[in-house]
Image (cartoon, rainbow, N blue to C red; front, top):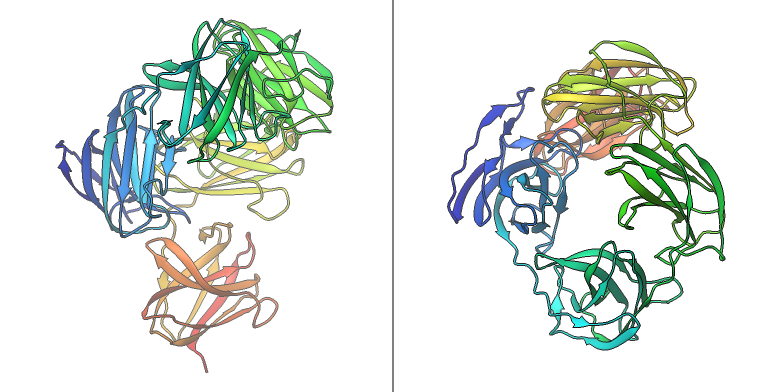
Length: 611
C-alpha cells in the first residue's frame, strides 16, 4: 500500500507483516479521520483476500460517533472503485455498507454510512473485482444533515393538497418531499393516504430526532389503492410525528392530496403461550395488517434473554412472520427461513413483557396455516476439532437447532491466515451441509457446501482462512427435516500449491491427488506455466486412465485465474485435446484437471505446436 495525505493533516501508522504463506503482504489499517484525503495505490505486496474472487485492498481506520454521517469517496482512473466499511475486528464478515459507483461515471465509489454506536470502523478501498493495481484518491468527509423543512400541520380527520416541485426539500438521495406534522398518543392508529395523478406516491412516517428524520414506516402501493400510497401506522409512544409526501421515482413533480384518518382497529390478538402450536386460516374475511394484507395476531408473554422460535407453515401461500413489542414496534421479520413457502423466525427477547406475532402471507394469502411458538436453548459450546481427526455424529430430536430450525453439531478449531482447511461430511440418512464462521456470539457464515463431493448427499468444504484466529464448523442437514448419523473428516490441506512450468514441445507426467488445488467447483487440478508468442498455434493433449480428462488454458494474474479456452473430450470420450492460438506475447497457465469433482489419478499432459 503506497499512500500520501493532503488537505487535513493527520498521523498515519502502518505495520506490515508477511502472510503465513509467504506469497503476499498483510497490512494493518492506516489511521485516518474525517476531513482527510489520501492519495494511495493498490500494488504488489498489498493485503489481499484468497480464493477465486480474490481482491487486493487497503484499509483505513476511522473513529466515528453514533449518528455521525460519514461519506467516503474513492476515485481512480486505473480500476473500477469499490468501498466497504466494517466494524473494527469484524473485517472477515459481511460489511456494514458497500458502494460501487455512487460517485458517478461508472468507475468511482461513494459510500454513505451512519453508525448506530460510537466506535472504530474500517474503510476498505479496493477494486470491484480482481487483483487490479493503480492509483486512487480516498476522501472522508462528514455529510451535512439534509435540510428539514418546517412541516405543515395536519390533524386526524383532515386532508391537505400540495405540489412537489424542484424547490422542495430533498432527502439524502436527492428526492424531493413535503412534510406534515401531527400528534398521537401511544397506541393510536392512523391511516395515511397519499394520492396523485402526476407521480407514483410514496408516504413515510417518522419522528424528528436531533434534527434528523428517523423513519418508522413507509408505503408506496397500499392494498386496493392502485399506485396511490396507503399506510396504517400505530404510534409506539406519545409525541409529534412527521409525514413525508414523496414520489417513488426521483425527479417526479406534480399535484397530490394527503389525507389523515382514524385507522381501523387493530386485529384482536389471540393468546398463545410458549410451547403452543395452533392452526388458523387466512381469507378475504380476515382482519388486515397495517400493510393491508389478511393477517392474524397472537400475543404472548416472555422474559428478557429468552430465545424463542416462531414457525409458520402453509401449503396454500407464501408465509410471512413479523414480531412486535407491546408498543407495536417491529422487532424482526422472516419470509422463507422455514424452507420452501414456510417462515421461521428465531429471536432473543430484549425485555420482560408482552410481544405480538403477526401471521400473514408475503402477498395476499388465502388458506390454512400452522403456527408454532417454542423456546429454544442457546447453542451449546462447540466440540474441539483437530486436523486429521474423523468424528462420528448423530443429529437427533432435542439437539440444538439453527435459525432455520435445522439440527446441527458445532466444532471449534484454530488456524492461521492463508491456511487451507477441508471438511468432508458423509451421511446415508440426510443431505449433508457444512458451514464455517468466525468464532463469536453470533454465527455469521463465511462459506458453505452441500454437495462438493458430487455424490448426491455428501458435502466437502475447502476454505482458505482469511485471518489468524478461532473458527466454528457446523455439520447439519440441508433441510429442517433431516436427522441421523454422519461422519466428519477434517484436514489441513496446507497452502494452495503454486504452478510448475512447462516448455512447448515437452510432456509432463503427474497425478491428481486430494492435496491438489481446487477450482471454485471443487475440482482438483495441477497448473503449469508456459510462454507463448502472439498468434502462436499450440496443441494441448491430456490423457488419463483414471478420470475424465479436461484441459484448460488461461491467464493467472497473481492468483486470479481467467480461463481462455478448454476442452473435455475432443480426443475421445475421456481424453482431451485443445487447439489454441495465443492472443499476445506472454506467460500463460495450462491446467490438467478432471471434468468432475472427486476424481484423482495419473495423467500425461503434452504441449506442442500444431502440425
